[in-house]
Every structure is written in structure tokens, then in C-alpha cells.
Length: 209
Image (cartoon, rainbow, N blue to C red; front, side, top):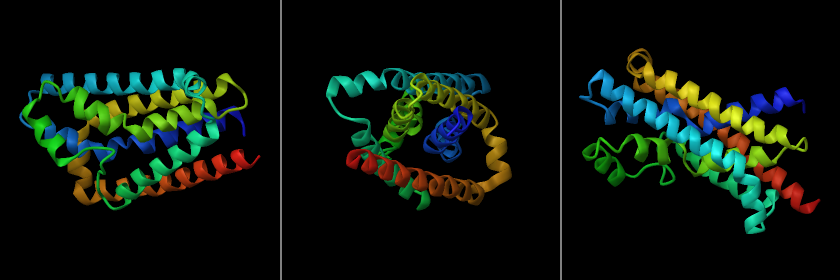
């Protein structure tokens, strides 16, 4: 696999896991009644925070492997299972417990000053699945730094795409409608499910090898 292909696959996968299109309705709901300037502040903070979290895990993921003594294969299997659960919820049109609970949603509406951090940045955008994905890609390239750079670039590209999607969020929702957003979320869920299965297969082959 060429470096460019690895970069593209990492970026697409991270985008699918973060799923800014599926998260867009929550962003719109949490910022109902906000002035344009207040909404932009929430948008900028949430994007910066979740992107920083993903980049940080991409950079220190290899050290976490060493510190806790587990192998990349074990993390790929665990991460693949976790990603499949997230993908299953996306295919069903639901946000599972690894994303957001009803109680979290109610509390977030009451604490609007905090929603840029919780639940938007974490766990809606930088959830366990996204963190697992960047760590796997950062440690999964035999080229060494290529994996880290691919994960970092993928996280930054996803952050930029999320900013654009959220910035134009209301227009996108108006044009796509609820059905359109649900359809796109399911497509991303199918893609994510395939990636999750591949993670597990790669991890099992690594353990057997």
C-alpha cells in the first residue's frame, strides 16, 4: 500500500467514525436560540477540542502501547469490535451509549456554556471509536512515521470538514432533510462496519503470525 493510499484510507475512516453529518442535528439542537456569534464560538471550540484530542492520541498512542504492555493486534481487535458497535448503531439510525445518552442530552441543553466541550467535542465527535481509530492507524504502518502522520492528517482533515459541515449546518439540514441525514449516516455506518471487520481480521492475523 502506498503512503498516499494509507493517508486517504485513514482520513476517510476517521471521518466516518467521527460522523459530523450524523452529529450535525445535535449541534443544531444544542444551539437553538443562540446568536450567530455564540453559535460560532461553540462551533470553533468543539472542533478545536475534538481535533486536538485525536491528534494527541495519534502522537502518544505508541507510547500507550508500550506503557500498558499490549500489542497493536490486541488493540486492533478491541478497536474493531468497538467500531462495529458504533457502526451498528449508525445503521439503525441511533446514537449508542458510546456516544450520547438521553440524560446527557438534557443536561447539555441546560448548560449551554459547556456544550462545546461536552457532549459535542467529547463524546459525540471524539468518542472511543474515533480515539481507537487514530491510535490504530498511527501504529499500523510499517513505515514508522507514515502511520503517525496519516492519523494526524486524517484528524486535521476531519476537523476542517466538520467545521465546514457545522458552519453550513442549517443549510445542509434544510436541503437534505431528516431523511437525507439518516441516509448518509447509514452509508457511513456501512463503511465503518467494513473497516471494523477488517481491523479484527488484521488483528487476528497478527496474533496468529
